[in-house]
Each structure stands twice: as structure tokens, then as C-alpha cells.
Length: 77
Length: 146
Image (cartoon, rainbow over all chains, first blue to last red; front, side, top):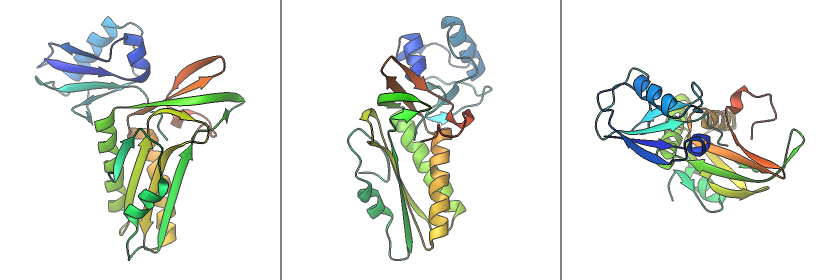
């Protein structure tokens, strides 16, 4: 299983902080597709994806146990 | 306390200056970013910051590494506060020491720019008549940054 985390505006849009999906072996791009289908209001293109606390590429392949975070545009400082 | 950290309590900037101070340092720049009341005519009541804490601390440390590689002889410490912050509270502190002042100034500014690019921290502005998560500050006109 893959563990998903949502933050800030995305957390409020999805209504969940965390959830599990069975997407080991799939790519980040495929996960993104799944997310935008499940959550039509998802800010497509605006957020980056981090896998195990490092920014990921759309072609990266997910492995069982990965922690994936959807990262909306950051605004620290 | 850690050299690169996300905290939930009030920040004491001096603690971070102390981390970077060394005998070979002739300069320490200490930047503190504060909660501003007015942004483009809109009054902020308070702010709420959220972070992906483990990744944010990792990215703050990465910024420190970038600086220490790019400007020889520098040492960096950074803390960012999350949770509810009031007007004038310190949201972020960046301490940089270096042998000479020019580098300490440059590296400090580099750090805040990078924080706004890569560190997973989000700010929500709460106004009298609403609230909104703020994002993508780099694309907005000047005046929007810290």
C-alpha cells in the first residue's frame, strides 16, 4: 500500500489528512490522475508530489510502503 | 533545539545566532520574518502556518548545505514557526555567520528565497471577512514577500 498525505488547501478540498491506496508499481503521474479523478477540485498542475520526503518526478515508480505527499504551492517565510 | 527546525512556540532569534557564531566568523546576519498586519490594503487578523514537518526540516537543512557549499566558510541555522501567529510574531529566523559581512548578507537573502521555493510550509491569512491559504508567492508582485 501507498500512504497519501494532504496539506493546507488540498487537505481542506479532499477533507482527509491521510489515506491508503493500492498503487505500488504505478507511477507518480498515474497517482496524480487517480487523485484528480477522485477529487475534481484538486488544483491540477499547481501541486508537486513528494515521495518519502523528496520531490518526485511524474515518471517515478511507487513502491509498497512509500509515503506520498501532495504539496500545494508553498508559502513559508 | 536543532540547527534546522520547525517549532510551535515563540522563536528566540539569539539562540540561532549563538549556533552559528564561531571564532572565525567576523559577521553574523540574523533575519527575522514577522507577521504583517497590512498586505495590499487588506488587514490580516492573524496567520496560521502548517508544515509537512519532517520534509520541511530536511529542506531547511538542504538550504543550509547549499549555502555552505556556495559560500565557503559560512554556517547557517534556520527555524520556522507553525500554528497560529499574531501580528509582529516571528515566523522565521535565519542566522548566517561568515568570515566577512558581504557573504553573510547574500547567503541570508538566498536562504529566505529558497524557503519560499522548496520548503513545504503553508500560510493561511485570516482577515476580518474571510480566510485563504496563500501560495505561489514568487509569482506575485513585490510586497507580497515576507
